[in-house]
Structures are given as structure tokens and as C-alpha cells.
Length: 152
Image (cartoon, rainbow, N blue to C red; front, side, top):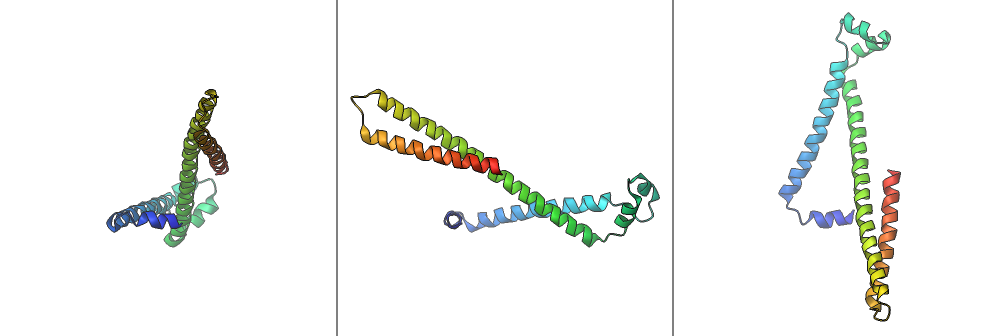
């Protein structure tokens, strides 16, 4: 979490305020859409045609008497679930991108090690060791990111 604060200091406060405002506006808009859909789907009081079209008339009658506050609470829960699902999707996408990039760097490192090993008598041992360690670290990171991608 600390690295977010370090990078946040390099962004002007006006931009941070804009980003926070945009994120909050999207969340509020999402909540209002869910709430409006809940209210619009609810049959109106005394609308017997809408009641007859429902599969369960008792539930439709109970839905007529629901307060807007109850619909808002349900819409807020649905908004939280949607934001959590979106957050996990973004985390999963980032894990996949990191896995692909680190796998590519691992492939480049292995290719470099093999190309250095091909010139056997004239091997630059320091560079060979650097690429071997870089390849091992990238392989470990690729495995970790792939595991994170598969778990989410």
C-alpha cells in the first residue's frame, strides 16, 4: 500500500480529485441504474395485469408494498457485488498481463543463456550468470502470476 502513496505524490492533487470524482460518479450512476431497474420492475399498486403476468402472485403482491428504501438497500448490495466483481476482473487481467510479460522476459533470458552457452570457449560468465538469475526470477514470477490468474 505504501508504494501507492509514493506514486500518488507524483500526481497533481487536481488530477487525483478528478479521478476520485469520476470513480465516485460511476459508482453512483451504477447504483442509480440498479435502483431504477428495481423500482421499474416492481408492479404498481393496483396493477392487476402486471400481477397476473408474474409467476408468483404472492411475491408480486409483496413487491408492490416494498418501500423505496428497501429497493435502495438491495440496489446498494448489488452495486457492491458488481464493483467487487469488476475489481477481481481487473486484478485477474493484470495478473494475466504480468504473467505474459514476465514469461516473455523469461524466454528472452533463456535464449540469451543458450546463445552465450553456444560460444563455449568465449563465455562471458558474468553476463551468463546475470541472464540465468534473471530467467529464474522471471520463471518464478510467471508461475506466481499465473497462479493468481487461475485463482481469481
